[in-house]
Length: 138
Image 1 (cartoon, one colour):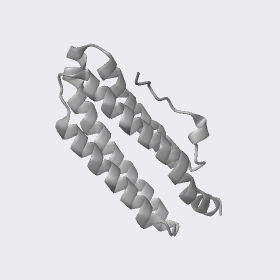
Image 2: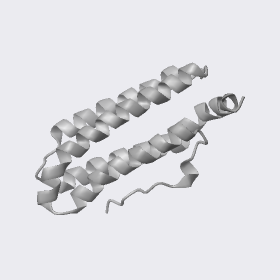
Image 3: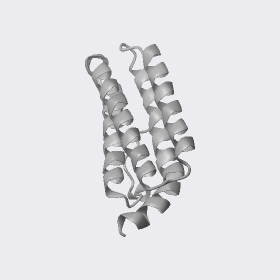
Image 4: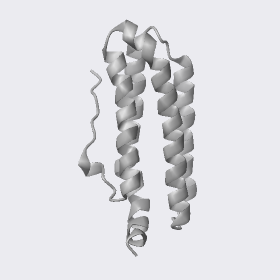
């Protein structure tokens, strides 16, 4: 069974703008979960709009985050950007196959993206945040 993922303060990087964006990213993803877990009619009406918002915000956030890394001289930027680009490409591919009449498709997409986002925030983002944080307070 696919479970909804909610924000957990254990994911905080202590970089306020980025933390707020991470929270918003999970909130947008949870709109997909809510639509897919609701009635098929609600899902059909909402899913395309939610997917567009999710992709648009993800691209905005990743660009913002990458600019942060560049500004503060994070040496792992190229690898981190590649992870972001691969994720966006995968989500776009998955959404092309997505049926707006089958909420289970939406739940499976949600499961993939929520797990990826949480894992990325928890494991990849702390590496650059450790470099950026001291410079924010300088």
